Image 1 (cartoon, helix red, strand yellow):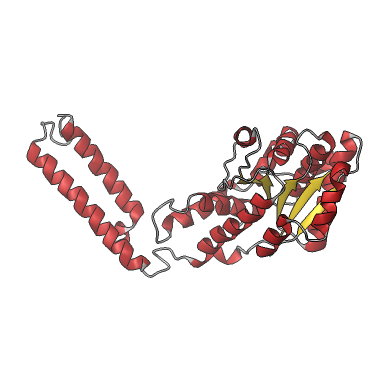
Image 2: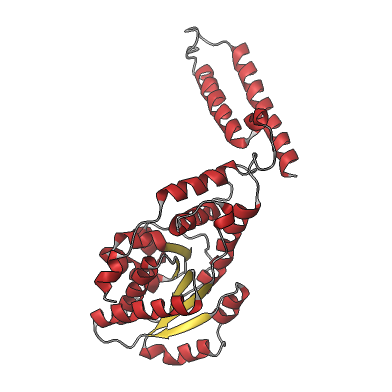
Length: 314
């Protein structure tokens, strides 16, 4: 399949499913947003798969693909014989590290080569999540172009990719220039200590949950992030919402989401008091007595919510 045909198959992740998935996270018996990056990763994965029901969400089968050129053939051979850290780390997450040697000498051929390699692996092994690492210099044009073609093919097949390292991020930028929607399928796994690593992620609009001070982008960070990817899915599937836990509707006011709304209202009232402004309901200045009462009300509401949250969560 030519690269133009692959690009035509790339569609954005389903925003409706992403929103519904995030709504489920917000309604779980926990502080709203407390799982942070795990929520974002899982919600976007739901959008990629076009699902939001917890029963439909499964842990994806994954592998780490380590890209290299002819110059890194000896290192690639070590990976193939399971003698590198990426092999051990990948195995810990149920994945396998696969070294891919790019042999193309022309850019058009490299795009096609990268796309063909990913298509073959995904079909052959039933992969639903990939990690990308790279042994080559970030300025190796052929390897970077092959990875760009691979990212385009993965997006066309609705397979997300965990990025690791400057070379891989530069490949993602190249792919996004051809098909902007490809970034919906890109996850940042790790910020390496390579020069420009932070800037590369910023250009892609991505943030990584891990900063392990690893000096390269060979894929170690991506494999470790596979564990976090699983953790988000586990929380989504196994935690309960207030409704699923059988909490009565009249108790919903004690959810942290509701308490957050109450706190904002009370904070606004206290702001008016402290700045000597008028009560919006009565048009009269608020007294010091009202200030103390409002603050006591706020503290009591927060304590009450905390006790109930602890009871339900425990």
